[in-house]
Image: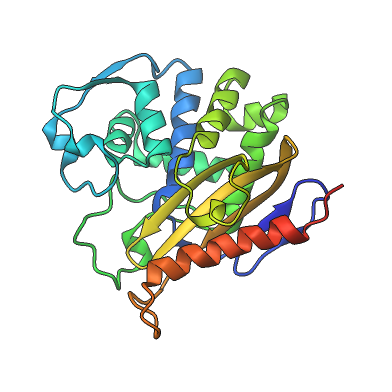
Length: 261
């Protein structure tokens, strides 16, 4: 799904279909944690010690390769979860929430096709897994979430909907802008293009969701999910390469063809 934020125009294909979320789920985990912090139930300055157990069943990020004993704040754990998609950090955050809490938070926002089911998907998850075996979402749900975060920069109503202070809504948007990975939706945009995004990977596809800026202002939101992609395409191209290339082309099509007012 893509939405031109200047005109309100939307386009989509299967945007309401439930699909594996990959790490794009982490945006809603971040916002649920910030809501708990806004309510005083979590302290973003809480110190967390990296224990070896947190590296078990983890396949993303860099902390899993580091020496146990490293100390992070909860704020930094959220940052690591988002910017490098570090799943040690994800565990640190989710151990201070419950899956039910995060799931209910999404439902309250109107994300009807988003279902948080597991702390971390098992590494041995088969490629033909069912949707019920992973956290799922939809492209439309992620547009809703990103647009609400964007609106909450100034809108008291959007801040209330997210349950977060304006300061934390602004911090969340900056964390999304700090994303360092340049494949997917960023891959075909001009190099210095500002995006506020979160990418993901699943057993059989890739996904990306973000706000794209132009001339210093939000231009469009694009959320793209691929699933059931073969490990290798007929011409020998790896399936994940084709997934990322497709997402990049979609973002570039929005950049080139959405009207700029």
